[in-house]
Length: 488
Length: 111
Image 1 (cartoon, one colour):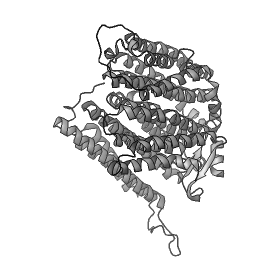
Image 2: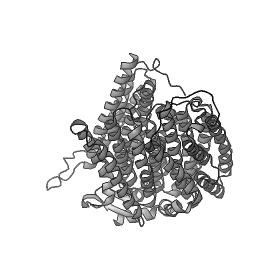
Image 3: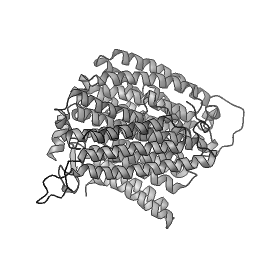
Image 4: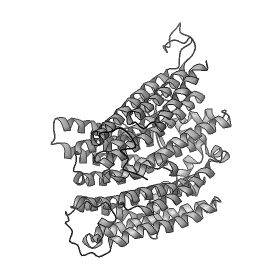
């Protein structure tokens, strides 16, 4: 069988066998989880290395009638993020989780299956189904700690995410009604005859639904609450993958189905860039007020997503490359930050900024990782965040969004203020003796791995950029995508 | 022909109204199921043809309804069922802790 099909199937199978092992054979739990994570990593690498030229997998040989899978550079970028984050996530959570481990890993594997399905599918309704799989299991994961705040945050998350899915479903049904097909290659061909106003309405439904899932500013209220008391390793995947996969779906729908010309004509590009600027300015201001580390990082995530939106929606080749690069970089940087917070939480149950006072001297390497990752996310050279932010600013200037470029620089200073606040607290000496549970190597290793990737991608940006240089070819011109999908 | 679509719009708006205005958690969940059933109804209407028969492609059946929306409707029902189940599970958890379903009394997280 093809590797791309196995990428979706194997986490589903693992989740199933984990459920069985919970009931009958508890001993195989550890080898099952780690073993399948390693096999999954191998499968992902196999698909990523074969991603260019783009390929279509026709499941069950139904041709255009069936549901096809498509691997192109943009989807392989997301597979790359899964490959980078998933094994550290598994290793970290093995040690970190003190609650029922089986449930946690079952939902984690289901979520990964949903995300990889979203990334690979070329069918509009299938996209919705996988979106629901990933967001429902994501809700279940954020519930795992079973604290008061966790449950409440999850309920908010569930409400908002379901509300978003309803609008996405409505738009999907209307698209089928108008075009009579759900294949992403046939829809743009059928869309050419549809009147401008009807197309705009459908696009508005899609954008509203996905903006709820991504958490752009007026629709963001659930996000910090859901992050506040959820298991911290889950936050790594949540900010690195769940939010991004909704963004992926939005980009794919807008660029492939509607096409860049329609986006330009309807003014969507201008609207989203403006929306992004507003979002990150407000999110930076809100992040400054937070005293809880998780909430601070959550608001910072919203702001970074807004940068990515600006990069992807300036509508030029440079913008798409910059935005995709920032997707990868943000996943790595935020992953490193959350894992450091996770170690602090594990060792001395710290969640507030006050709690981490003086820890910089107790955990020298871990705190250094935190400093590296936070300076990278602020956008200082020579880290990876600087590279992608610089590319976004350049792309915005090139596409005549001068105000966006200016406010990104302002936003950099705003984010510097609150990250410096945390760093200064981290390195403030205190007299109190702290009871510290020593974090083992299995907690430190994933953190240091992600932290060192920040430096590596900052010094050698050509490494990931060689993959991303091919992305605009498939997104800016939807003809290429359609030709490959119809040809397969 | 237009009346079913009007019903869909009414159901959708009714559900949204319930979700936005009601204070009781159970009523909010009911609002979600109403919106979901309106979307399923819309799916059925999309595939409907007057005098259409079951989609069996054989001699003698000339007008058949579109089978794809029916398959989609089944999937949507399953997804809706699981969403409702997860929501109710969370509501049970909330009720066990706070002994109330009023949304104003359980709000600890603000902003």
